[in-house]
Length: 427
Image (cartoon, rainbow, N blue to C red; front, side, top):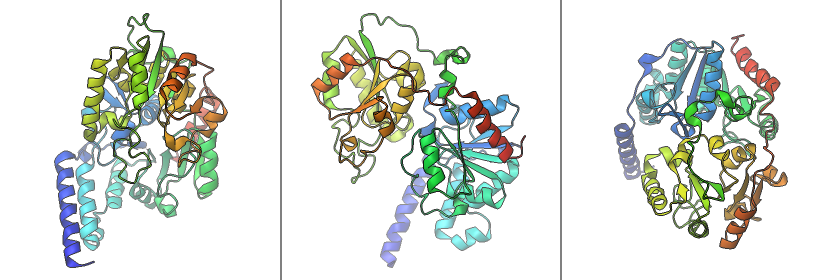
């Protein structure tokens, strides 16, 4: 690399680093205590609100269960999260500043970083040693965290956030065995089969009933927090309610080479859908922002757009539908419309069929194989957007039998949670 090129790279890195320091400062390591299980996740996984705090449906539901069983748990926010301390359920601990420093040192002074034990892996080692954790559970587990856990012989688990995977997460195919977790908690038999067949046999895979959707089964509805119930309002003038599950990636946020680039003029939903909303005042339309769009600072303009749009269309709403649990909203809806959001799995679990409109899902598209299980079971339809298509689908759609899979299987839940405890020698 030439000197000028190296200088340019260094200046860009310093500029980006300075921006991150200004935006994401935090170091709560002094709050670390002895723990049995450490839970990790990022802001984007905290798409629900509970007690005016961001709540992670997957991680926090599982953590709450183990705490009720007397297991000591701590939540640590993945770098670079903002929803830490009092802003999120369980007061996630921030490690933004030390992680950023370790990244800078490792990039520009790698030998010094290794000599002084200041690499990202060393940071995670110190956290694990200070908490004396027996198990690590994470959504999108980081390679450095896996390596630290392997070195300390601590069992690490990836909690998959998708219901039915068709391919391994990015980077898993090139990661070393030390950079991958010891175990996987999968939310479906399809995902379990994929990871069992395409990863090392040394990685244990367990299928667990969805920790969050499980809370919305009839037997457990009475135990839900009151604030997760959709407020009663007069909807008698509306024939039905339709959920619109929005998805990130259509506003230039996947980069210029994204398959979603240029598909949607407003970056959120098709103009045909906007026409349908304006012409069907007897339908109440509920927009649900993706957690990335709801929490991310760079989506402020999109949030302002949907805020202005809803203000001009009295038969629409977005704030309740974006912050309350999807199952709470789905209880009142007849169907779900989306471009290509995996929220269609949660909708199906609540008995909602989905109309999927992204061109990439159509025959010959780059994502044509996505949601094939739901397609075969009749829970979704894949179509090219048109005004008539949307109105015809909305008129005919109605609730169907919930796709529960193993959600009500208490034996499967007990087996999976017992496996976690045994992995850490906690039972």
